[in-house]
Length: 148
Length: 148
Image (cartoon, rainbow over all chains, first blue to last red; front, top):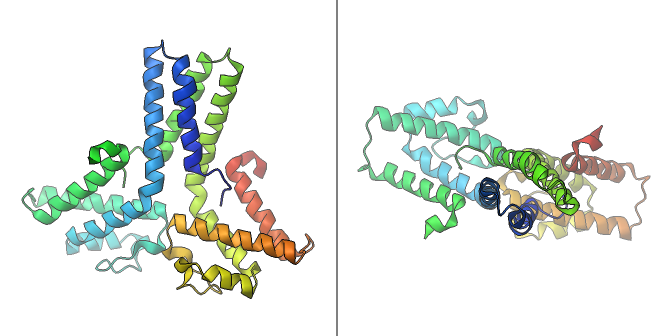
């Protein structure tokens, strides 16, 4: 484990440096000011992602799996990482963050394919609810003000 | 799960921006140049930490627990998060990253206390080996060149 300061404390310090020291220096250069603000904003996104990533991954996973059909669950379980998992009561805890993301990406691809091929409409409440909730969670990391 | 780009890709882009666009702009200002380089370097540390954090946490945990005495293990297991754990064959997989770090910090405090109170010397091979390996892993994240 890395000693203090934590990664989020370091990122906050770099945010401060960009806003308080770089911004005044580049204030006459529009493009540099803009890119500095973008960098400052992206650091905030990453700080929020580091802090909230794990619970949101678990929430998205437990919400997406029940929406997949048997065929899609079979495809997903072909991932060697998932061979020990019962996808009807999935437990992600033994996977690393990188593995969780890889599997969730695949699950999303399978859900998107199902939506296209079976022409699932927004009137399908389960699918609509999952997509809206996941979108809100993503946006709350991109910009907390979207959550208002 | 956040969509592409990943947090490490964003951090690399900010590194590029600092080095290629901010550095030339502040090159006549020693203090700002210095702080820009520090920020660039810290972003590299954080990128390496994000990529390697989980396996290094698991390695440190499995290496530190056998060094603790029964009294220390008892103190550690008073943490409500660890109440279901058998510290003689600990399995961290059900904990979140934040919980893992919290417990590892406590385990380190207990080991440091033991070293002080029992006057454990560097000639104690198990403790020396653990501390050297953990230090090397920390430094490999701070600066990969230390590993050479």
